[in-house]
Length: 46
Image (cartoon, rainbow, N blue to C red; front, side, top):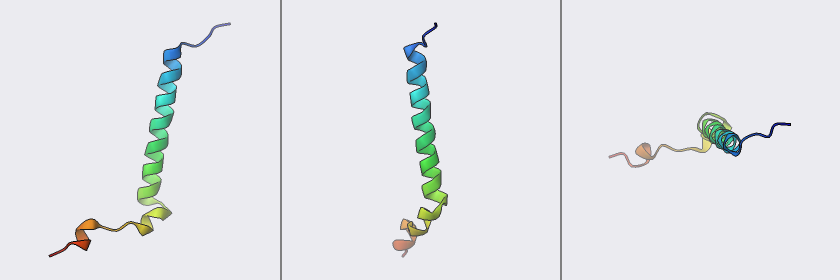
Protein backbone atom coordinates (compact mmCIF):
# COMPACT_ATOMS: atom_id res chain seq x y z
CA UNK A 1 0.00 0.00 0.00
CA UNK A 2 1.40 3.37 -1.03
CA UNK A 3 1.24 6.26 1.38
CA UNK A 4 0.93 9.79 0.08
CA UNK A 5 3.74 12.24 0.52
CA UNK A 6 3.30 14.83 3.28
CA UNK A 7 4.00 17.53 0.69
CA UNK A 8 0.88 16.51 -1.25
CA UNK A 9 -1.23 16.71 1.91
CA UNK A 10 0.08 20.18 2.73
CA UNK A 11 -0.43 21.38 -0.84
CA UNK A 12 -4.02 20.11 -0.90
CA UNK A 13 -4.73 21.73 2.46
CA UNK A 14 -3.40 25.08 1.24
CA UNK A 15 -5.42 24.76 -1.97
CA UNK A 16 -8.64 24.00 -0.08
CA UNK A 17 -8.11 26.95 2.29
CA UNK A 18 -7.38 29.28 -0.64
CA UNK A 19 -10.50 28.16 -2.51
CA UNK A 20 -12.63 28.50 0.64
CA UNK A 21 -11.41 32.06 1.27
CA UNK A 22 -11.96 32.99 -2.37
CA UNK A 23 -15.48 31.58 -2.29
CA UNK A 24 -16.25 33.40 0.95
CA UNK A 25 -14.97 36.67 -0.52
CA UNK A 26 -17.09 36.31 -3.65
CA UNK A 27 -20.14 35.40 -1.56
CA UNK A 28 -19.59 38.43 0.69
CA UNK A 29 -19.03 40.80 -2.24
CA UNK A 30 -21.87 39.67 -4.50
CA UNK A 31 -24.21 37.56 -2.37
CA UNK A 32 -26.90 38.60 0.11
CA UNK A 33 -24.42 40.08 2.64
CA UNK A 34 -23.43 42.69 0.02
CA UNK A 35 -26.66 44.58 0.71
CA UNK A 36 -25.19 45.74 4.04
CA UNK A 37 -21.92 47.00 2.55
CA UNK A 38 -21.44 50.76 2.20
CA UNK A 39 -19.21 52.69 -0.18
CA UNK A 40 -16.64 54.65 1.87
CA UNK A 41 -16.13 57.12 -0.99
CA UNK A 42 -19.84 58.05 -0.93
CA UNK A 43 -19.68 58.58 2.83
CA UNK A 44 -16.95 61.25 2.57
CA UNK A 45 -17.91 63.09 -0.57
CA UNK A 46 -17.04 66.80 -0.71
